Image (cartoon, rainbow, N blue to C red; front, side, top):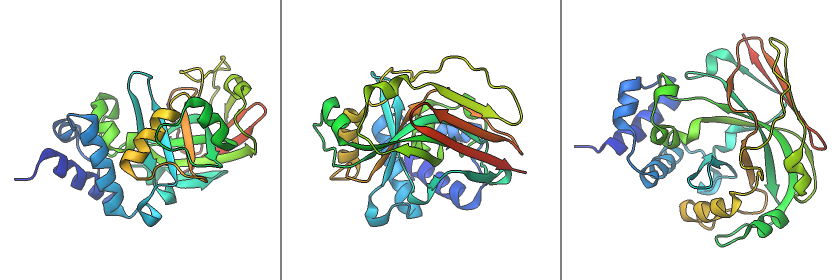
Length: 255
């Protein structure tokens, strides 16, 4: 009899291939019990779908809290340049938007790296939008472990304008503007929830090395977590997000 983890891996692969999503009850029943199991499912899904050239990711998302960081590799074909458009029909269950800063490494960041090492390894900083989607119904009701196994809700990463520079601490205080052609988005002060967007990179360096040795390499891209929570986009909507001193990124949802 196959384990629930094996069944979930197969179900997620099928969802990506067919577009058919899991029911909420099945997603809850098959949710892994540990982070270790969730990350194993991530690897199995990525391998089955042939997501990574040379079996190694070129992009990562990192998030969570200082107490429980989380991460997911991003498929090579799911990393795109903005402006980017996606048909509403291409979603599994949602088109969620997270406005983030992404960085590209100019040197490796191995296991054991410090935060200072992470700052020094940065070669460019980019405005980014992560598109989130879930391969199961009723995502708000699903266990965190299911969402982690489902590549932490990642669908794709849109990279916008960039500055070629090492990390400057003032980037953490960038002024963020988010505009939509369909609605008013409140211009409240937005900040990264952990204050320093790169604070989890030493943990990610360790995690990436354990999942895909030798880990983070020069040229890899890391998106560092949302500054404005997650909000769903709708057909015909155009969203532009900008970070002061860095640049803009644009995404649109086709009918």
